[in-house]
Length: 567
Image (cartoon, rainbow, N blue to C red; front, top):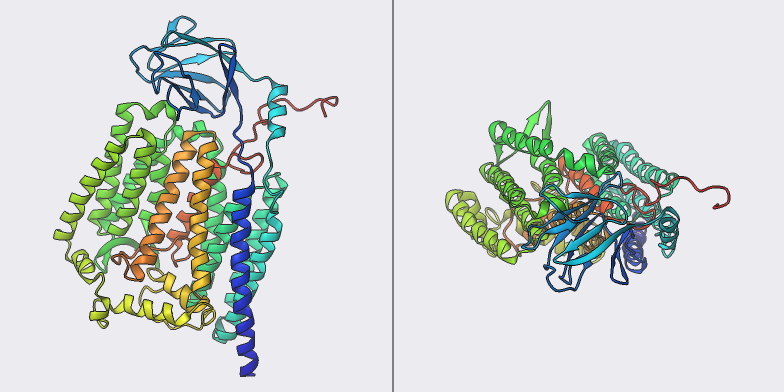
C-alpha cells in the first residue's frame, strides 16, 4: 500500500508540473500571438492626410510619443488633449501652451470646447479638421479587428487547470487528516465550479478573452493548496473568501464600464481611503511591531489591502486632468497621507508597495524623470528616519544576509524557509507533506518556500512567472487601451503586485530584508485575496481587444442594430 501511495505521489507530481507549465505557456502564447489592434474612433484631417484617433483620450502634438502626431512648426510637443465621453461627446482641451488652441476661430478655455464633425481645430497656426466616423465605417473597422481565443482556445487551458486542481485534491486525500477530507474536497469542488461558471458567463455575453481569469484562478488554486495544508479547519472560511473575491472582481468590472461615473466618484473614494486608514491608525492592535490588523467578532481585516484598490481608483486620471498642476499636487498630497498612515501603523512593507505604485502613476501622469528622482530622494530620507525610529525595522535590516548566524532567534523564520525550499527540490514532497507550514507566518510571509517544499521549485517558478505574465499583459494592453484611466490603473496595479511578489520571494530567501508582505493570490488571507481580484478588474479594463473584456463596452454598442439587408 505504501508503495502504491509513493507511486501515486510521483506520478501526480510529474503531471502537476507538466500541467502548470502547459497552463502558463498557453496563456503566454495567447498573449504573445494574439494581435493587439487599436480601435479607430475619428480622424484628424491634416492637409491630405487623415490621422486616426485611436483612443478616447489623445495627446495632440509634435512629440513622437503623441497619440496624434502633428509634425508641423509652431505645434508644441504636447499641445492639446482630445477626449471622448461614454456618450460620444468629443472635447478638446488646451494644455496651456504659448500659442493656445482654437476651434472654429474661438479660443479654447480651461474647461475645453466640445467638437462636432467638420469643426476646424487650429494649433499654432496649423489648421486641421475633426471628422467623426460613420456608423457603417465603424462597423467595418470593428469587424477587421481580431477576436482573442482563435490561436489558443481558453476552454483547453481551463480544462488543464481543472485537472491540475483534481490532482492537488488527490494528493491532499493521501496526506490530510480524515476529519478534514470532506471540507478540503468541497473547497476544491467550489473553486472548480466557480471558474467554470465565470467562463460560461463570459461566453454567454460573447466575451472571448480569458487569460487574466485563467492566471488568477491558477494562483488562487495554489493559495487554496496552502490553506488546505496549513489551516484545513478553516476551509469553509476560505470558500467564502474565494466566492467573495471573484464576485468583487465581477462587480468592480461592471462598475468600471461607465467611465464617466467612475471618474465622478474619485473624491468619494479618496475620502473612504483616508477614513479606512484613520480607523486602522486609531483602533488596530500591534502584532510583531505592526498595527495593520483590525479584529472583530473572531475575524481579522487588513484595511490597507482594500486601500490599494481605492488608491488606484483615485490615482488614475483622465488626460484632461493630467496636465493640471492643481490635480497633480492633490494626488501627491493624497499619496503622502496614505504612505504616512502606513508608516504610523508600522506596515513598511505595504508602504513600500504603495510608494512604488505612486512612482509609476507619477511618471505616467507627468512623464517627468525629475519628479520620480525627487520622490525617490524623499523616500530615501524617510526610510532612513523610519529605521532610526522603529527598532524592529532596524533589526530586520541587521538580520539581512546574516540569518544563519542566529537560526534560533532573529534568523529563525528565514533559515527554516530556505531549508524547506531546498528540501523540496524540483518536484516537491507533495501537497500537505511539508513541515514548514507549522512555522509562524509560513502560509503568508513565506508562502513561496511552502510551495517550493510541497510542490517543487518548478511550480514555484511558474507561480512567479504567472504574475510576470499579468504584468506583461498590462504593459502591452496599456499601449492600445481606450483611456489613460485604465492604462494608468492597470500598470499601477501590476506595479503593486510585482513589488509585493518580489518582497515576499526575496525576503523569505534572505535576498532582500524580510518585510512580511503577502504573495498575490497565494498567501493565506481574505483581505489580500479580495484586493488582488479587484485589481484584476483594472487589468480587464485595459484590454480593449475585440470582445475580450466585459469591462469595456463593444465599439458597436452605441450604434443602432443592423438592418436585415446589412445582416
